Amino acid sequence: MPELPEIETIRRGLLPALKGKVIARVDLRRPDLRIPLPRDLKKRLEGVRIVDIGRRAKYLLIELESGDSCVVHLGMSGRLFIEKDAARPPGPHDHVMITMDDGVRVTLNDPRRFGLVTVLRKADLPRHKLFAAIGPEPLAPEFGGAVLAAALAGKKTSIKAALSDQRLVAGLGNIYVCEALFRSGISPKRRAGTVKGEKAAALARAIKRVLNEAIASGGSSLRDYIQPSGELGYFQHRWAVYDKDGKPCPGCDCNVAKTGGVKRIVQGGRSTFYCPRRQR
DNA sequence: CTACCATCCTGGTTGC
DNA sequence: TGCAACCAGGATGGTA
Image 1 (tube, rainbow, N blue to C red):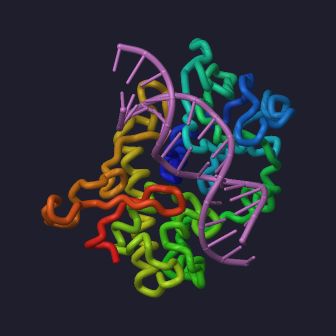
Image 2: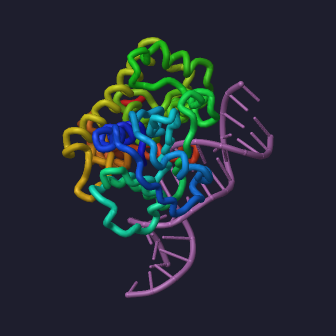
Image 3: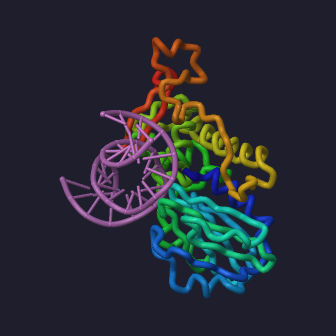
């Protein structure tokens, strides 16, 4: 599942390949993604130069010289591929293919079609429905205990659900929420509003650390962030608790047969993984 | 306003 | 071995 670090890694991988290039051709193969592709998408992209690539939460923002931004979200199963040319015939779930003036092609592949591609005026992004309610970027310098505690204040829901809510903090998904809570020793079941003061500061630090480490792992393990297949943004990372149900928690020297190790529970219909001994 | 739940989708895994 | 049932979860819209 692509979360903030994967999108950031994709951004860094795309930037050198796309910045300054002119989009030569856009092929739309399936219009029915999470929101329908805009009818004028092709017209607004073709012949236009890419000036930068940004990111907000889990959204990739391909910024164009025209003042438009092409907005890409990968949903749950979306992947981006980059290829030196457009020789490969389109495969299943290749929904949008964008070819540059130098022949480089970027393909959005998304089997579940929870992703989206649209184009908006860059100046309108902050007020647009997709972005207006999104919370603070956790890697921004100003994000810390105070900002986090303010977002959580008064929330009766679990800290797990709160951190997964894009309106409170941007970019976290199931995996990084579990990992950040583990690192800060906070139970996923704890009421969000009770995380304040030094606890909130520790959680904010854990969030930054887990995201930065994942981004660094993506950057260091793959040349230019691009796998041999041309896929961008994915990398092998060792989770402490995510998907480790029944495995020993890396912080406990406990006997799994006795303690049960990492525990899986369901919150809001989603799996949560945590260590009941270290997380309170 | 908050909290909670169902829904969208399909590849991969599990169970019989 | 084959097939059906189940599971994964980001975002959103509806309900209480």
